[in-house]
Length: 125
Image 1 (tube, rainbow, N blue to C red):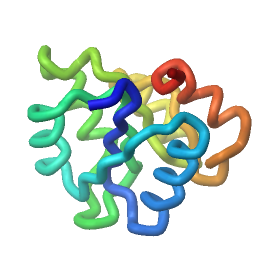
Image 2 (tube, rainbow, N blue to C red):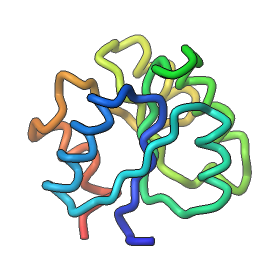
Image 3 (tube, rainbow, N blue to C red):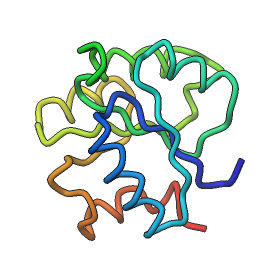
């Protein structure tokens, strides 16, 4: 895998496409999609990711992104993987950081300089 391989979890198709396009153009990143928590945990166990982007509420099944963050951060084998929440809600971002995530960004910020700076430490070549 490349050093800038990203896992996007719980996004709808349109948002996954937008995130993938933004990260590919800005950092040359490859983005893999996981629809559910189970799928995300399976991929995290099989592949190495530079970054995991987690939707606040999963499009496929309504599961909580913060719950996935808690699970990842509780797993000794996965806790070092940087995880960011994708949400426009400040309270959700706060909850994610309290659960162990790095400060994330909202979909409204996608492609903006502040969003790119937020992910740059994990994806800059």
